[in-house]
Length: 288
Image 1 (cartoon, one colour):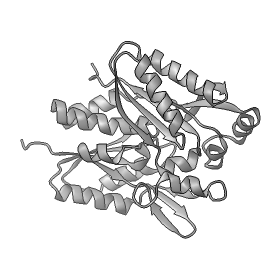
Image 2 (image 1 turned 45 degrees about the horizontal axis):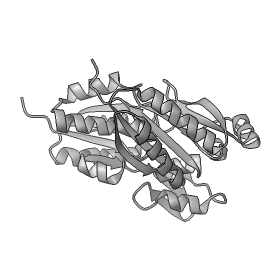
Image 3 (image 1 turned 135 degrees about the horizontal axis):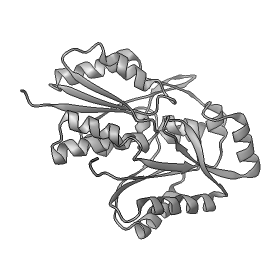
């Protein structure tokens, strides 16, 4: 039996930093951003600050990569000698990328695929690509072991975030108009997460950014407990609050490995707007 050569692909909505993707050999698949003047490719020729600079007058559209684009990527990986491909996508409730990945895989012969609907968003999705890469590189896990582990750990990412306004979620069709109006009128900061179906739900509410950040950090500290955890902290044009959050987490979580901090991708920024902080705690241990 020939040795497995495993490629890992993740869409840019998974919010994996470029340096980590390069270090662990994760191939990023760009989502699309449409402005009147042209089509952009997420994390290639557009960044979140370009999006924020054009708010609130311009809110662009986003779309998934085409099946032909994904087929081309898969074909290149096959030519490079990869025998197995793990594809990681943000929740199929938010994007058609998962389905496009599955359809594209049907056209490629001689490669074994695992296409994973993380039922999550941002780093809550990207952590699976990162975990898989580390398990392969550091522990020598096989394709079967890694993919079975990913399925068992699907509820392990504990990601919650808040933002200054719900307007952009509402305009992107991510939440109802009533929820958006109530949040903006009452100045409530809902703490948002993804449920087991991969849809947004309100995990809590706070009045004002400081209280929201305090509740978020308290929740993460409690969830981490005394076990070893990986932590990521994301921002949407809220760098000072990100730095504050990192220091609080380092001081209060007993055994944490800060995997990365990151400004969310352009496609994520479009649907959330400025003033976002998201924190994820993840237990990286192998499932029993």
